[in-house]
Length: 235
Image 1 (cartoon, rainbow, N blue to C red):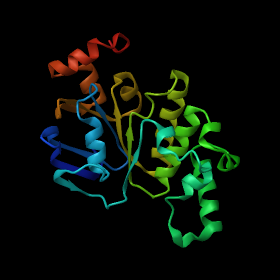
Image 2: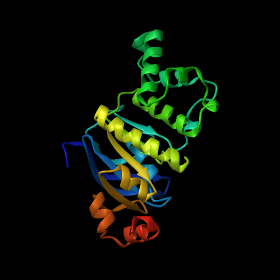
Image 3: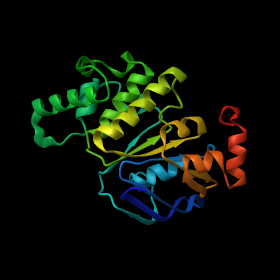
Image 4: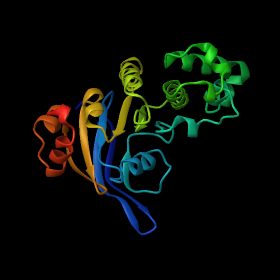
């Protein structure tokens, strides 16, 4: 692995008495895309929320400052204020010291960075396609200048043709910005395409972790094998 960016040791997340995440440990290198895969309810999204300060956690998370990990949600329409233009939504998380004109210009630059035209800034979320809204959500996350992008099921609500474009965008942003990515998905085909390594999660625990080739071609855990058997195109 390349130089370490993030180290997670003994992560626990509880909701009341329910243990959503139990003793999870992993690392992410600089410029690496780590896939976190598992069935619904396995604890993947709780890991994402814990890393970005949206869920209470215990354990050790080291290597990143408070704003250096930014979350992109599964449903961008729910995370964007329908009363705000796209430009205002993207500018909302930018530093106040930029001033109004500076924030407007930076929001336009971020929209261009995610392959949307500057004219998109004047539109509302309802006027955009699902793929365009997801690009806006990514632009908002990038506005904080993160070193780690936490992408939580960002393609699961999109058509297959649009999924590929978003996956390519994530790979391009990794190359252009030197970003690291925690890419969360239940879809092993998607994870295989975009990630460098894969961690498999079951019932709040990581049961297997390795390179894409190791996990896909030579899985060691029965749960991983069962996931692969459910996706014939990966065999």
